[in-house]
Every structure is written in C-alpha cells, then in structure tokens.
Image 1: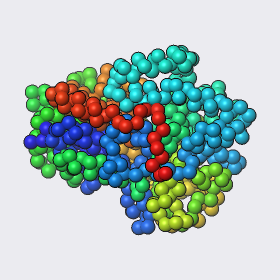
Image 2: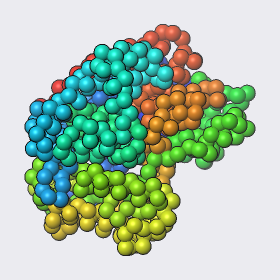
Image 3: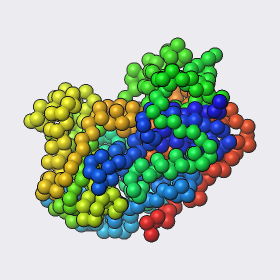
Image 4: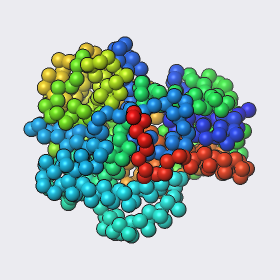
Length: 545
C-alpha cells in the first residue's frame, strides 16, 4: 500500500509526488492520459522535423520558483534556453516595444516611444527590486503567507505604502496612462496582463502585468531545450529515482471516503488503490468536488459556492511548421521568443469586451511563440517551429467577424478561426502564410481532450480575477490545499496561488499532507529540501551560457 496516491501527473502532481518521496513516503501517481505532463508536453505531430509544444511553452514562473529550483532538475537532464529578447509587441506602423533581459536596454527602447518613458520603466524596476522577492515569497508560500506577508508589508511601507498598494491594484490601462507618455510601456504591461484573463480595465490587471514584465526582465521567458516535455521527463526521472511509481492510462473515477477520510481511489477500470496516509488531487476544482468525491461527503455551503466557480477564458491554439523565419515588419519582433499581437491598448480592450459579450473576436489578440528562436533544437536551421493562441468565449453567443463561427468547434469553426489567427499575424508579418509548411489546430475541446483540467481550453484552473484569488480560491473561505475530507488535498492550479508552471500548488499540498500525517523529522527534511540554492530575487546564471 503506498503512503500517498497522487491523481494526475501534471507538473503540480509530479512536484507533490517528488516532495513526498523526498520525505520518505511511498508514492503512486495515476494519470488518465497515455503520457505524463498535463499541459507540459511536446511532440512532432505537426511535422516530423519540428518539435511543437502541445500547450504551455514559456516558463518565467518556473525560472523564478524556489520549489522547482530546490528539485535540482538539471541533475535529471533539464536544460533551459532563451531567445535573444524576452518578448516584443509590434504595432501595425512598424514600431515595436521590446522587453529585454537587461533593464537599460528595455528602458532605452521605450524612450523611442516618448521621452522620459525609459525613466518611468526604471522606476517600476526599482519597485521590483525593493518588493519583488517578498511578493514571490508570498506567492509561493501556503496561504495565508504570514511571514512573507509581514515582510512584504514592511517593504511596502518603505517603498511608498498605500500609494504603492494602489499602484498594484490599478487596472493596467490606468497604470499605463499614469506611468508612460507613449504606447511602448503601456503595451508591455497590458499584453502581459492578458496572459491571464484580465481585461485592461480589470482591477489588479496592472499589478499582474507589472509582475509578468518584471519576471521576464529578471528571469527571461525560458524554454526547456528539446521541448516542453523535457521538463516533465526530468520530474518523472527524479520521482522514479526515489522509488515513486507512475502509472499512465489510469483514469481515477472516485476518491473512496470512509468515516470522513480519503482512504483510496478507484480507477475507471474498477481497481481500488489504497492510500495509507493521503490522496493528493492534481485535478480541477469542479472535477474533484463535482465528480470524484461523492456529494454526501461535502458541506452544503461548498456545493453551493461551486455553482459560482468561474473558469478563465477558453483558448484556441494553432501550431505551425514554417519553412523560414517569420517576416516581421518590425525588426524587433524577430529576436523575441514571445510576440504579442494587438494594435494598441484600445484593441486589447475591444478584444476583451467581445469576449465578455460572448462574441468570438474578429481581431483576436494573439500570443505568438517563436520556438526555434528560443531553442535551436526545435526545427531545422533556417526554419521556425511556431504557435499562437488566443481566447474565445466558453459560451459563444455570436461571431464578431463574418465567418459565422458558432462555438461548436466542428471543422468549419476550427478552420475559420485558425484562418482568422493567421490573418492577425499577417497584419504584422506580411507573407507569413506563404511560409507555412504544416499547421495543427487545437480548439477548446481538443485541449480538454489532451488534459481534462483544461476545461473548454481554460488554462489557469479558474479565473485570475480578484474575486477568485487568495482566500477566495477556489471558493470563499478556502485558499489552502486542505479539503473538507480528511487526508484529501487539492494540488492543482485551482488552489492558491493558481495557474502557471511553478509547482507551488503541488508543493503546498505536499507540505499540508506531511504536516497532518508525518513525524516532525519528515517535515523538517522537506523544509530543508525547499530552501533552494538561489535566494528569491537573484538572477540565476544563464543556463545557455
């Protein structure tokens, strides 16, 4: 009998399993898909000469995460690579805002949009230098992060107190207007805010856009050499080296509860797998409480709150094998791993408003990934492995364009939306479509089929909006990995601190399980393993150098 059963072999499940194994527990991980990884996988399904990432690709939060640093995955084969520039946001007139890994270079570029904007960027970076490490400590610590929050409060007082707190909760449109005279700085902040489901006018979107921008400048947007799957492979190798067991093609259908405690799981094939100490679930919140755990074991209030659970936006993704580099009009876009495609903040607002109204955007904001630019192993020299994703409503009421996209995502919808994404790229890179050797379309149902946690293509485990964060995540009054069922812990992005490949939800669940069921020596071993080699806020050595 294993001490712990982990449901799901996504990054959070694998992190949790590794930490439990480090503490001396026997661990068995059950994964529904034929391979591990969840949203961290890659393949050659677009073209045999090209590696494409199925879901996630760039990992600034992984680079910043003390959880992943402490696992020393480089000892298990993981290597990171960076594009020359972190990200770019070109405009239709040929201008381009570029986020570099060197702050002076970013600032100098922003001065080209408006005199003084470089100094404004430096001021935002100075705030990061003061409070960034404490923000990250609070982010990666189980809720409530008492010690980290106390330190952060002290830092905030010395850095401007309430005025700084106000800045961090501003909508990103307002933050950009207050800080910058030109469009460049506004675009960097607003485009990064749209990595989550935060509209430019949403409270807190300014703080999120600033956080992602600072992470990119400090740590870059690195990619695993050889494909996203290399990160998963390193986690699996580490787990198996410590005696952990991974079983794929084993979908869990039920968490077995006796006398209020999780004691086992039952697979879709009818096998009962006992858990001596804990069950950790790297699954979505609605799946855990709406499917795996019988309603009779859950409080009425929790079930009522689940009816208000909000997913983040649905996602539509296209992968390409290109026979040459992307022909960007703006040269600055050619060196960036990530490119944001929207012609100004107003177009971002228009895009978000269409989503809010249930309309398929006619000019979709696209996040475009140049994977060979970031990692030369992804495709033959002189070519590019690329992708773009955009967001669409979960419930489509109308098409804001002229193609009559219904949201049923049958072949007609998929092809029309993929063409629309390509047309958006063509606005900034005329001739792009002539370089497509092959493409693959991942509509919302396809993404969900690849990973059941990606409900309708939602990639963050639930909205990033303030009403479903901290003590409100996943429902009001929670914020921690413990569940109403003893011995059952939520280890997915549905728990604090939410989406992104950083391992914090899995680590928090492992800590909670050890605290409840382990002797103090096991917990202390885990705590020592989480100290990591780099202090938060320090730039790690560039693994490509």
